Each structure stands twice: as C-alpha cells, then as structure tokens.
Image (cartoon, rainbow, N blue to C red; front, side, top):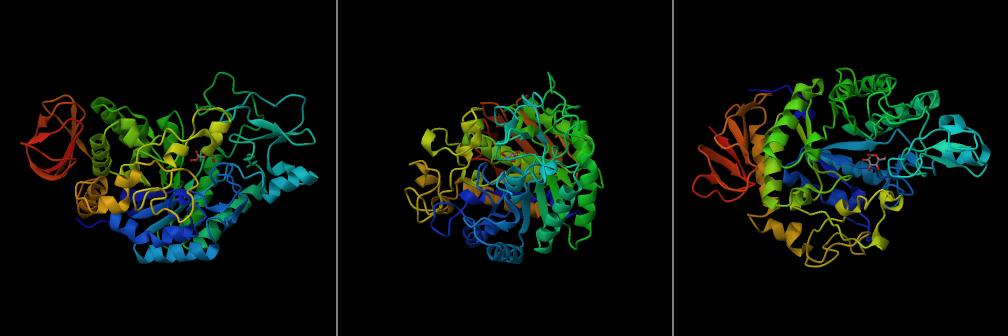
Length: 498
Ligand code: GLC
C-alpha cells in the first residue's frame, strides 16, 4: 500500500529540551551546537522529527517559556547561524524540525513590556488594570495570584509567573507580530510549530471572576475562548502558503474532548496533544478506555500519543518498572497516529526526585505549587561513569545522579538488552510497518482480563498489565523482554504477526 499520508500524521517526534540535551560551549547548559553534533545519534535512534522547546532570548524565569526576543537565539544556546546550521544538518539527515512558539505571554524583559512599565506606552498590548485590589480572583497556574503590580501601582495579568505577562490578543499589533514571527521561522525552513498554551491567548473581555469553575473547564474566562480559533485559521493559511507540509501542534489542556476537537478542524491546527494516556493509571481498562475515547472524539482524526514531556514526571518512574515503560512504548507506537517522545526516555531515565532545593530552578517550586519539574530536566548522560557524563566539559546546570553511569548512551549502545537498543529496534520496526497498517484498530479479546490487545492489519500488539505471565500465540516481531515458553511476562508486551 502506498501512502499519501502527510508526514506528521504518523511521525515519531522527539522532544529536545535544549538546555539539558548536550553542551558544546562548556558552560554547563546545553546548546544548539551541542544538539547539532548529536544529530547522528537522533537519526540513528529512528525518529522522524525533533521538537525543540524554546531557545529564544530569555531570562529563563520559566525555562525559556518567557521569551524576550522571538526572533533570536539566547546567547547561552548559541546564535541564529547555529540554528540555521542545525536545521540544514537535520534536513540532510531526514529529520524535520518543529519549534515552540509562545504566544500567550512574553517575558517581562520583552521590549514591549519593559517599555510599558517604564514609560506607560503600549500597556494596551497586555492586560493592565487600575484598582485597590486585584481585578479578579484568577490564580496563576504555578501558584499565587495571577495579578502583580507595577511600581506605579497598576495591576497586570500573568497566568504563569509574574515574569510572564499575558498578551492582549484583542490588540491588532499582537496578531501582526506573531504572524511575522511565524514567517520569520518558516523562512528559516522550520517544518512546524508546537504552540504553547494554545487554548490561552484570549481572555473574556470583562475579566470576570472564575468562581468555582475549573481553570480549563468549558466556559472558563481564562482558556478556550472562541476568538482563538480565528487566529489558528489564519496561522493555518500562513503555513499552507509555504512549500512542503508545514504543520502545527497545539498544547491544549481542556476538560472536554469536544473542545479539543475544535482546535483540529480541517482549517485549524494539524494536531493537538492528547495528554490522556499520560494521565492514565497502569491498567488495561484505563488504557483501553483512554485510547477509545481519544479515537472516538473528532480530534481522533490526528491522534498524538504522549507518555512523558518536560512538564511531567517521567513515565519510567510513574510506572515503576522498566518493563512497563517498554510496553507502554510498544503500545503507543502500534496505535494509529503519531507519538511524541521526550529526550532521555530512550535511556530509561527515571525522574530525579532528590535534587537539592538550592539546585532547583523551576518557578513552580518557588511559587509554592509543589516540587516542580526540574526532576525530568536533568541533563542527559552520554558517556563515562560520573558527572557530567559527557554532557558538558563544565558543571551541569542541574546535578546528575551518581548512578547514571549505567544509563549513558555509551554504556547502552554496547548492550543489546538495554533500553536504548530496545528503542532502536522498536522504532526501526515501526518504520518498516508504516504505510502497511490500516489507520484504525480492532480490539482483540484475550482469555486474560489483564491483557489488552489490538490488531492493525497483520500486527497484533498485546500488553500484559497484570503481574503474572500469560500465554500467547503468534510470531513475535518484538517483545519488551525475553519471551520464555510462549509467555508474556507481567508488565510485558509483544508485537505479533498473526
Ligand atoms: C506550557 C509549557 C510549560 C510552561 C508553560 C508556560 O505548559 O509546556 O513548560 O511552563 O506552558 O509557558
């Protein structure tokens, strides 16, 4: 079967958190040149595209999701020339590049905001209000009020840190600016955008109290406003005006699958993340219901499966056992749609829970809403037996655990039973199967209730969510671990041809 499917529909996209990927400059923070040098590793891994989280000029109050200049690279990550070299090399190796775009808010160091605070000029590009008390009851997603005051006493809105003022999308200059930013990067040959806080941007014009409503609930005055769809229709026409299949994937947190579907109407975004599996517990029933709900919803046209990203606890730690992580990967890679992987999951990296407080950098930690996300952002171990494990010649910006020597790329490359070797096998096999599988799945009945199995064409994927081994029949294409006597181990999975 030949396929005219657009590349992103069944792509495996690898999320790169540049600050923690690989450091070429020796300053202890990853950079674009470090990433460029490691591109052969990524192409050898067998992914189709890279999604780079923000590398723009930024004070890094929120890991770069606080952008001060949307058209430049922060010096700690390199230069625009480094970016161009990265894109060119990636394309030569057949890897597409998706970059993050952060339209809901700027950094407080952005010239628009700093000038607004200093001179009062241009405050209408943000949400400034007068008053003795905060204009409404909204809370920041990271803890604390969503309003802070400028030195002259005005309030401004920030749904994240006070260093991330929310833009006023009713202002025409805001729209024009982002259209121009999209073109700037499309002209530099990026293949797509991941849109940060894609359900944000517009707020209810009266800024009413949220009251008892959930932040992301239907009808929320903070997220999911209908006006946002006109913006995405417009962005879609910009993407479509470029050669090649440029795409956009939205980070849309919403309580309602119907609302999610609105973002992927044919003239809007190509994909919206479905975070549901990431939130599902390790159980056959939960996985099946989650997948079925995603596929049944209108957004199921372009499914996106995610187990980990830079905002959540790594799934190696969430699921507790390495075998389960392997099985979860086999499960999502066999599903129709695309899979988004997060750097380091191919090494089986666990979440680092015990970072010292003084090393932590995530604003969530400082704003009092929990331990934060630094534990999934610890720099990758490449080689050697001790910190910095080949990540840098300097001191890594977050300390790496002392027992990561066995998890380095170098150590795992030598070991055919390692997680890395397993990821390579799974991704290679998926590539050979791509285009031969129907875009739908059929659930298979198994004698054991803790096994979840589905068929796509000749391929059957079966995951044993129980603790005890269960029997199976069929030719094994791939297994999460050693297959003894025709049995899938507890927590294990097989891909069968039958
Ligand atoms: C998104 C990003 C997250 C960031 C937040 C604010 O949720 O994934 O890392 O903190 O937006 O920009």
